[in-house]
Image (cartoon, rainbow, N blue to C red; front, side, top):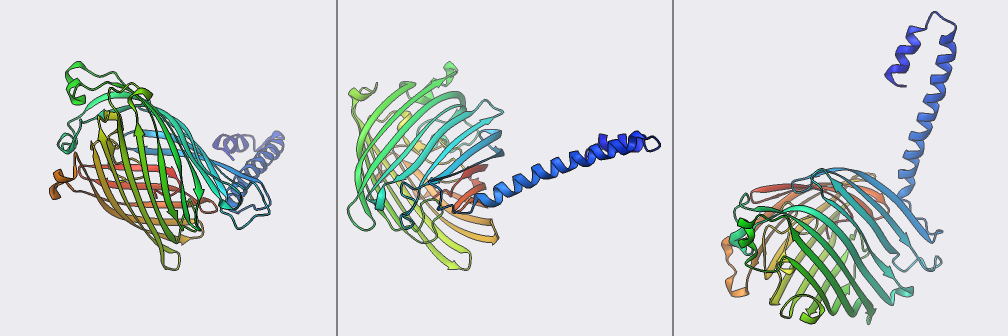
Length: 384
């Protein structure tokens, strides 16, 4: 019952109308309680695996705050599905529609997922997203990003689409072709800050092909509790497939492990390395930060031809669908292996809250700390 309703009932306590007002308020209360109960029931059922349904779909949204996007509103719609509902042994396919909007003028929309073919003989991994982001640019190289406050503002329009089609060639071994498209546009740059781009094109269009080799023994794709994951990716971007004057490419390695340590506790670790070569445009340089790697750092603050990072995270279920996570890690960027320096290694640590939105699908709120900066992150699924 609202405050107005209380005052109205009290003000008419000596009239015959007070009886009718109370009845109306009781009815309103019932409707409100009924609505609240429906919401509670929706979230209660959302994490129950519905194997009798071909498609299990749920939506969640909420406010968030981060150092780069400031106050925003995120929306995620997550779904699991099986082509054959009688096949309960194969890992279900998953798809997520995600969007975001914030007070600084940032907005994003995208879709990502993993389509699992019958008996897991093939996998189709995809991610397509577009964003408009008034962001910061420090420059290229470790030295450019070493001063957290020495940056310029610009707006980036960014479109990326990637797809990997993997064939299972062993029990947990996959291999297949990959393709990627990127379009990046830098706008609203003040003339006295153009030097940070080293004279490169501000509008970059790139299309590339390659392959991916993957070993995956994880028990779940979205919230693994055991297993090992290893993926090696190679991309090649010919100059004729974009607006770059020369060819370039990159190699990327991801290693992850998951191990139960005690009741409700999982220790997870991730190592990531990305090495690019050739005439690499600024938008395709290796970097870290954001919601997945080195959480706490502004994504793109440090960028160069090479990047490495490592993270160890302890995830603990606390009560029913609620959990906590703590992590620590380190990372660096470099133009080539011989130029790596111990003093350029950057620390990272953080703590996060987990809520099981759907079965084996967590909504996470992380607070990460980097050198000279911090960040809040709201996202779906674990960082790795």
